[in-house]
Each structure stands twice: as structure tokens, then as C-alpha cells.
Length: 343
Image 1 (cartoon, one colour):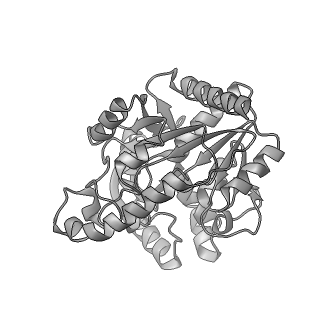
Image 2 (tube, one colour):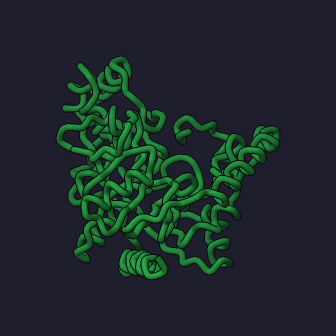
Image 3 (cartoon, helix red, strand yellow):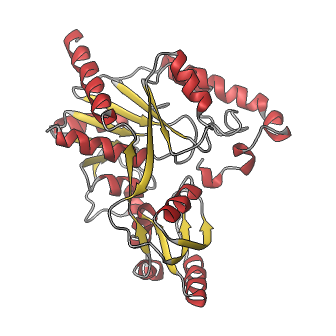
């Protein structure tokens, strides 16, 4: 379930709805705990760095994955991305071609990742990892899959939104947690808080007690966005649209109107028509995320034509400590070398 589909009470103080669902959440949490503790994880002949989160929804995993891959390439490492994808299914791991593949088939995030490094999509992450190893990858950056991947993770970096944290702290369906916090933290190697705020303090304290390093990062506009002074209609179909709107304001735009959709939303002709009409009537520039624009450009008919009138705000993840990416990669590769020596 994506945050855009999630009930608003997930991100508020626990109320009667969260507690009414507590018995079901307990069953879900028990199943998730058991799955994580008993999973047989295949060891592959490459270092595996997992970028995950504790809750459903977007916390900034993909920009963090890209930032770390960029650092790995600067270190002359052959890096590849591994993603489950969103949309189509494949009988075998599929190597994403950003020039030919459709977002409806491979997913929007894999198309963004494929601009930076080899990217494989498949529900079978073990098979996908083997495909990347065959392609010569020394480092596999796995976008998501922290709770469910069936491959050994040499380093698991957990991204937590500093403004939203864990929401009401309850497990699905009473809250956004994918599994109980204490059980997830057993498998985490480090935490990165994304943005400003104190909502992630509970996770930071848990990580500190467990001796896990905590890094800080933020999403910022990439390069010269050209947004300063523009009056915009901002729309997004991502896990956390409010984060996107805040970044637009940081870029200097005047956000006059917003429209939020569920994560990975397939835009309809009626929806884009309404957006175009509102923007035209009020003299607004239509702005969305890179991920949403990818989906628009791969949509059929009038929706694809609509994409030509939309501007995307490019963003990047930036660590507050310049040495953080190097430390993460150094520990990942050290864990992999130790694993390989032990056989």
C-alpha cells in the first residue's frame, strides 16, 4: 500500500481506529517478524547495499540510492540497481532500457535509476542479483526489499522521514509500519534521517541504543531548476507529495495550487484535462516530479501529449556530512569482503 492510498490517521496520533485494528496489526506484525527472522537469504558474489524504510510510502529511498551509486562510480566500482519494479511482471530478470522500456511495464523508479547505472527489475531479487553479477557488477544497490528480499544484505541503510517519522507507530493495517520497530532494527546497519524535524527521534534513539550509526540527509533541487518566482500548479503521484511541494518552495516557486494522487498513479485523460484547465485559467506553470513525468510520457494518447506542457523539478539527496557516502560504501564493501573470505 502506498502512502497516497493510506488513511490519514496513520500519520496522526494513535486514535480509536488504530487501536480497533490493533488485533489485526498484531497478526500482521507477527507474520512480518517471522518472515524476517526465518528467511533464507541467498549469498551472491557481489556486495549488496539495501536502501529500505520502516514504513510504507516514499521517504526518499530512490534519491539516496542514486547518490550512493554516484559515489560508488566515483570510486571506480561497477554498480547496478536491483528493483522489484511496479506494473509489469517478468518471467526472468529484465535489464531496463531507459530509451525503449515503458513505465507501465518496468515502473517509473527503475527508469529513473537506469539513467545512472545498470538496472534490473524482477520480483525474484535473488535471480536479479545474479543477473547483475553476470553483467560484472561489484556492488548491487537494492532499492527497497528490506523486509522481503531473499538475498543476503551486506549493509542495510534505512531512510526515515524526519517530519513524519513512524506516523502513529502502529503496524499495518492500523498504521504505516511494515513490521514492529524492534524487529526491523535488528536487521538495520544504519539510519539516515531525511529532512528537518523531530519525528524520527524515536528511531534515532533506537539506533543509538543498538550502536547503529545515524546519518542526516535532505532532498534539494538539482542544478538550476528555473523555479524561482514562478507561480505553479504542483501535482504529484508519489508516496509523500507534501515533501515535493516543500522542495518546490525551497526552489523559490510560489505554489498556488496542489493536487495529490496515490503513489504510482496512472493519470487519466480526465485528470490531466482538469489540471490543464486550472493552470490555463490561473496562468500557472504545471510542475510535477521526475517520477510522475516519466509515467506521463509513457502513457497513451492525450496523456502523453499533456506531458509536453509539464515541467519536472529535478532533485537529489545530499548528506549533511560529506564523508557519509564514503563511510557507507566502505563498510558495505568491507562486510562483503569478510563474507567472501568466510565462504
